[in-house]
Image 1 (cartoon, helix red, strand yellow):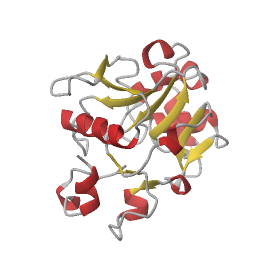
Image 2 (spheres, rainbow, N blue to C red):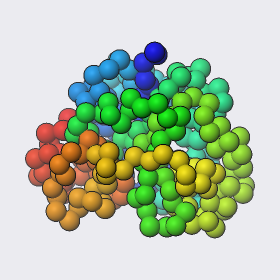
Image 3 (cartoon, rainbow, N blue to C red):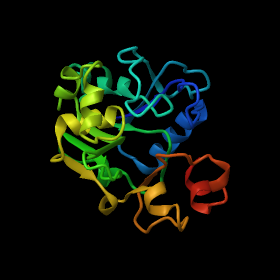
Length: 238
């Protein structure tokens, strides 16, 4: 079986966006994956600026598809529609037959094999937003190349963001994925060891037992000064 590809994404954010992602965020994610996913894999960064990224990271130049499509929630919110290309019917020629897309603002704390060595064509982290149409969070998506290609082929930059917004599907790309696929797909959850720092940990600062990955979708990032006192972040985000 071909090795899994782990896909990271880094591009210059819009002016005023809350977070900044330097090359070290890619390098740290690569190292966390290497420690917690011992099976053969490719580590890829799709980026418009490879400066400072470690030489053993495979670079894929960032495409301009949907670059200028704003978030339906306002320009200070992230617009990640360029990631929809992972659903292109021919993306296997770039990423390989099976891949997982990961956000940079995460801390990996446990064995990833139970999450990634699964046979489903599509699994996404889910149920992190109270909006009724928000079925999936784009922070982690496991995909067989070519599966759910309607997410790419049916996207219309003029109408699709409005459709997902009207259906209360929060986010840019993840909002469209929720709208396009509906709520019946497989999801990663707390039962799998996948946690939200904002929703599950921020009040106690304590890493839950059995956690495998914690996503920092929100104002605070793993490298933010206000969380650097936490031992489990210092131990794992390196």
